[in-house]
Image 1: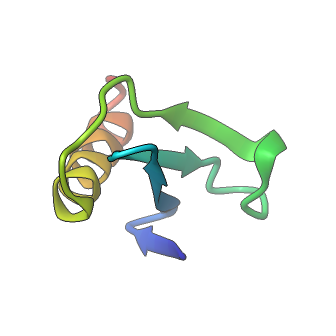
Image 2: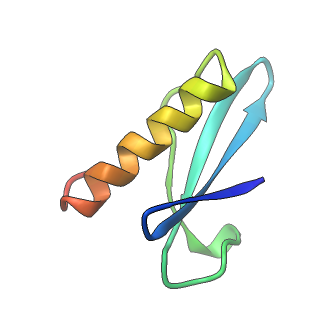
Length: 65
């Protein structure tokens, strides 16, 4: 399920026995071509991946990440 935080949309997805996130470009519809960041790490829970995505969006908004 695609979620929104600030101007960005992101998705938390299961990957084998872990969770990952994908952040989409805010100016385009979420799709494979509009992915701007994927998590470099795997997370044990969906909630951990969600918090990491939100943290990464915060970095993007500050010109980092």
